[in-house]
Image (cartoon, rainbow, N blue to C red; front, side, top):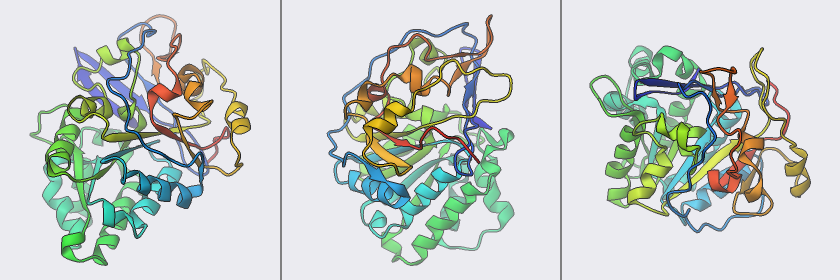
Length: 342
């Protein structure tokens, strides 16, 4: 299950996701040719000035808050844990909310290729498309060999948008764009996504929901980690260069089940989150400009998600030794709690 796979400086970086939370899975493991990553890089630009409730609880409450963000920002980058049902439920609730199509007409996803856009357009418009034809939308992505997009939650999302569009007039329908380069598209993965967002959304003064693995949306990252990514320094970071303050980044935070044989480098104290929250409901959306969450250590709360597994010493977290904070990583998080369970 690949979170990201790119070639940069003759290095292939792969991330695998496996967390298990309320019937869904996520773990992230990456492979680079660096022996160990310690350095960090600052944010490229300040995040948008967005005012949110201190806590938005449950799928429906989080969806309402995410929709409100579009009144203050042009792009909401909603990071997912691959193949996790909770994330699927959230984004489907989001697009099914009656206010969503009133504010957002574009969605860019990692699980569709740029070269199969005509097929995806026909399906989302409600035209007849065979299952075999539709499968080419995700089977022609750079990640097809990993099988991650074969999970039913991804075609379920397309089906949900198709259903929403069936109840809307033609000039008010949502369009879904594939962001991953398909055959013949020689752009890097994030370069392709950013090009779609610029050409189809920002240059047209539109608004978009973007759904990718959470690591694509980090506002900051260890420098050596970024040095292995080539052009792909992160979708949000790339957008900030030309369109500063227009993108709001949301990432998941919570318990992780690591694969057998991989010792967790840190044991996060999720009681810090729990004690600081008024609600006991999970999931809960928390702004990361809010104390104390903004100052929580990325090493502690994200240190079990991305690993460097090459070089001596076995797998090590890319966040080990970093003093990055959650407030530097993203603008908000969806906190799922400490327990990871299927």
